[in-house]
Every structure is written in structure tokens, then in C-alpha cells.
Image (cartoon, rainbow, N blue to C red):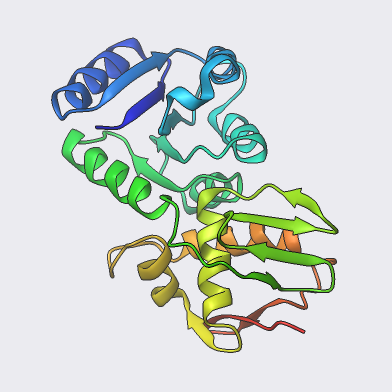
Length: 229
């Protein structure tokens, strides 16, 4: 069972999805707006395992809510959207979403996505070593933390697992498909844009100059390679 925060302003959709996910064994709390969701998360963020966020919300939209959650909380987010435009999907992924589902959301498909996201955002097996991955960045796998000059860098669970995977294969080219399988636990049905968006967010947090990366290199047409100086 997962404890879910559903942010959906369409009451019939919220009620039907809440009932369906509850019947599938989850505990669901629904909020009608991003503002209400932020209040709930501020008061009891540890009460939830994952958030499902509609993109088209009144007031603050789902993209902005996702962005705020990814900056301050280690809470996985699945975006729920009626728009299948690739640009909208990429924007959502760049905001920090771990996955997206296009409406109408079939409950069992949503349940499968929830379980997949939670499985891959669970803590990885510990490694006692603290590994420098840059001139001022250190990865501590045992503590599941990353530091710059001793100060913690906030990474989402997906970003952290991506970094750990790249570190474990440092110097090797990892294809987008292999990263999708290892980090997102998706096979060939997965969307490699998840990988590109997560790499972009990770670079923004650990690279000195994200536009001119020296750690995570793009291998055109193939994937990515982490080089540790």
C-alpha cells in the first residue's frame, strides 16, 4: 500500500480515481489545488509516499507545484495530464516529475506506474565509501546524499539513482535505453525523454557550468558518460 496525495481540481475525476486507487490497496488524500497541496505537504510531507499532480490546476499549475516539490522534498511526483503534446511532457519532466500519465488514466495503469516509481525511488543498497565526483562534489551512497564543499545538495530520488548509476559505470557510455531500464525500471515501452530531462536537472545541480558540463558528457546519438577528474 502506498500513501498518495492526489492533486486534482475536477471533482468527479478526483473522486473516481480516489475510489479506484483505494480499491487497489492505496491510501489516498485528495486536494483540489496546488496551494492546498502545498499546505498539506508543509504540515505532513512525511505522511505521503508519492504525489499525483494534475497539470491544469486553477491558480498555480501542476508544473510549478512539481518544481517546488522537487526543490525542497524527496517526494516522487507523477504528472496527470490531458495534453499529450511532447513539449508539455518535456516541460513537466524538466520540472522534476518522475513520470507522467495521460488522461483518461486507467486505474490499473496508474497503479502499475505508482509501483514502478516507488520501486525505483526506494533507497539503493548502501556503499560505505564517500566518492569525490568533481573538484568540490562528493557522493555518499551510504547516506544517500551529495555534498558540495560540505553543504548538502538536494537531489530528487530519481536524480540520486541516476547519479549513482552513472558513478557505478563511470567512464562508460550508458545508452538512454539502458539508463531507462536501470533507473526507471522501464523496458522498451518507456520514454527516453525521462532520461534527458533528468540528466539536464542533475547537471544543473552538480556541474559548475551546466551549459558546459565537465562531469556528465553527452555522447551524441547514444547516451551519457560520467567522467570523474
